[in-house]
Image 1 (cartoon, one colour):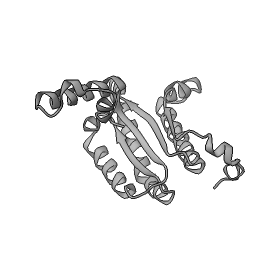
Image 2 (cartoon, one colour):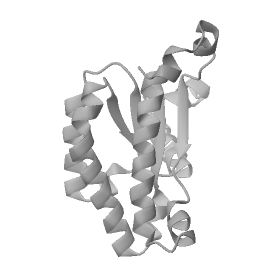
Image 3 (cartoon, helix red, strand yellow):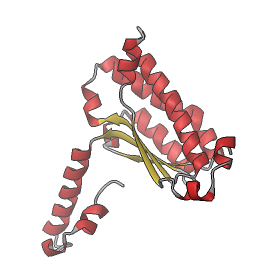
Image 4 (cartoon, helix red, strand yellow):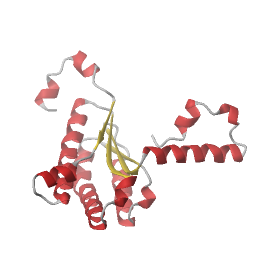
Length: 182
């Protein structure tokens, strides 16, 4: 545990959030402002993510969601999307052992089926390796959009109603929550 974390008072530790979410946005703009290629900004973003994951685990945060690739990101130039997928696979291959050592569990939300097959395979491997860990749960939002999540939840509910498995009168916040990705 880092020195800064070990010096937190019990009150300070108790006041820490259980779930922190980070929207990883602006990496390309960061690079452009420095005269660097956009992909360099994404590489630096991955380095920042590594530091955030480490700090969240040390602080005792239970859930960390990284909004790493939105559904809208598919509209970016193909070479940029390909570079992002390459960084994701590289990160998973090189960091899974470190995540495992630090008791991090990995979960993924979003339209994973839209990711290239090799990316999906690497995600499955990493999740399998980290499945039994019970420290920080890292949730990666990939090909994710909140509106898409809501649409898919409503479709799931509608299907259950159509199949007679759910009475429309029983649709409430809990029923909706059960159909969301997290």
